[in-house]
Image (cartoon, rainbow, N blue to C red; front, side, top):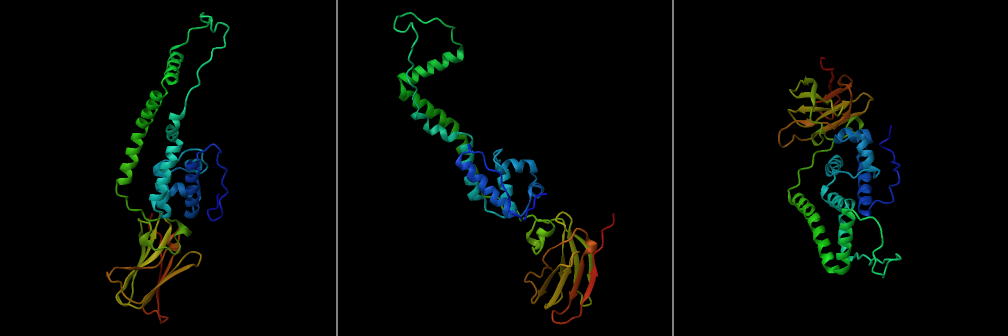
Length: 300
């Protein structure tokens, strides 16, 4: 299995890729490294398959817009800069940038070296097909009227580029959607604030009412496999502490009550099973008195 915490060893990109495409893939590799996820984890958090990410990150397949946006959301990266680089890479990959040089192309006049040349007698040979006749006619027009041919090429390029320009302008003008909070799982959730992550399916797996009336709950997110304590306090100056399966702890001391009178939480701790979570409530942060209780597995 790929180690998400180690430096990734990327395959060398194909030499034929446009520079804008290479720059985009390099940016995506850096974002993937910052996410701390391996390809399997990236597939799970973005709903894009592991094999697709392997092709995108190794230059085998051009990454679609929604894949780049999903990776930006995972690492909390602003999309404006990288999406502008994606648009340049998209134009380079589709070959649109080459249209701008078409007006410089001039076909060389055909020279007939056959024995019949200059005699007025056409050289024998098979009659050209419709496609060859069309190409010959186009070549003749470009040879005799290069300015007209260049204008036609430019008009054709403009017709191909116009839909792309309208598409990119409409997406740039639209208000940017609010960035989703980052997604985490197990040890990647350690120390994070549960209110600012996408662990949106928490369950209360144990609760306890303290002697001073404070309501303490052990919360667990099955999708993130991480837990934390939530308490509705009755006074300030208390301390809460949660211990995970490996003995790791997360604690919070609350010197003053929140201004919104809402609940207080600890940071998150990795926990695949709620029965392995241990919570303690200290009515005063400076006294050893405490009330502790354990998490319980939900009924099947």
